[in-house]
Length: 302
Figure (spheres, rainbow, N blue to C red):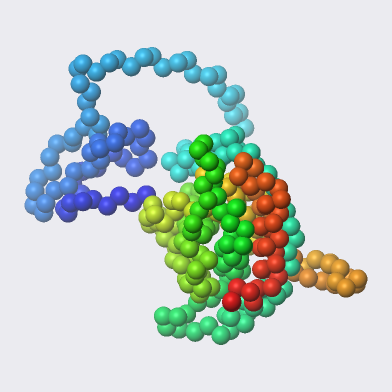
């Protein structure tokens, strides 16, 4: 995460190296100097405790370590992001009662609409855009959340928090892990706006320049692995959100239409829900609304 200095100057000395852990809040991390000014001696990276401060109790004995790995291997130290991801996902699986619902959804009408809209899009200039299937899925998810608002919610100890805005977090893979930039008020935005915002956010994510307000929050998540050919999967909920949609690849499958076999492009979507917030019937209602929108995508134009 980038931290913008409140003062101007030249970075004269780094006090806290990249990747350091346990740095105290408000501890100096660098020294700024003016042009021509000598760099002062390094300051302590963390405040020195007062002499009257209580002596901390000895740390409890460490738990027995797992057996050491004995095949040839290469060990890469965990980054701060990877440690955060590991902690949050472990907490999510241990503390959130996950419940899963899957549904097969036909994509042919959506693919046809996407091709027609892209053909009509400006080729250059400020209005240029190129829709992806994921852009349409974001918009369809937002519309379904408006139809079934009970899924746009979180569990708290005091009660269930129902969100006023439809803010959708979209999982983006970056070299160091995974991050979820947010399309704010996605239900009020057109497809071109969603497409351009998503491209911009993904670019910022991959260059490590996302601002906290661009990835913190959100009421619902989408994880799409269809571009990798993954047929179906179940995603882990992103707390404190109450649901996440896992999107598989669209592929030709045999289907029955009017009593006869036919071929259609079908994707499998799995909705993971926090069962404290969303029960099976409510989750099924949301999936049915999402399916109806995807299979009749002209409704997104209304």
